[in-house]
Length: 210
Image (tube, rainbow, N blue to C red; front, top):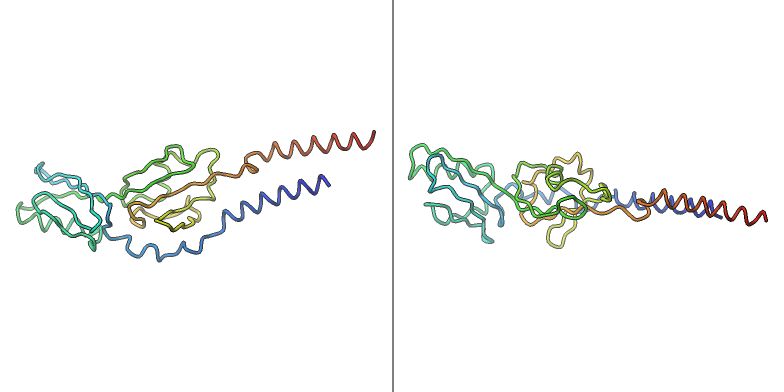
């Protein structure tokens, strides 16, 4: 009976691990549809060489608009991230001769749960998902690397094999949260459980022999 109990516990642990590795049906390429575009909540870091008055950090409002130095209000909701530098360079050419412009688009991504430094981070759109978890200090000792989810509003998307994921911050949107889950109590204490079962089996065997 004790052996059966031990096997049941191991089977339960195996079932928990298998469930954690099961992919979420919503983790599909569809979620990447608009990720390459400027999104509300994004932050633009603008640097214009030798023109300090033009330097600024601007947050895209909920209508996809940004107020840029000298240019005023621009609607950037449908602007691809990759073409933004050329767009701004052309606009600033109306005021500056051969403007040298550096533009960085940042996304506000939460990295929470069982990481060493959970927080909301502004990350470059070229960072990968593993980079973002590393930025948060990596997975803790009790974190479950097989239980990483992406929360977007009321949606929960399972992230599979995140250590090898090539998912970029540009695939996400500002406000997304990456959640690292915790390993089960049983998996963290398996050695203690097995040891306790062994002790119990020994005591029971001794009692039956008396």
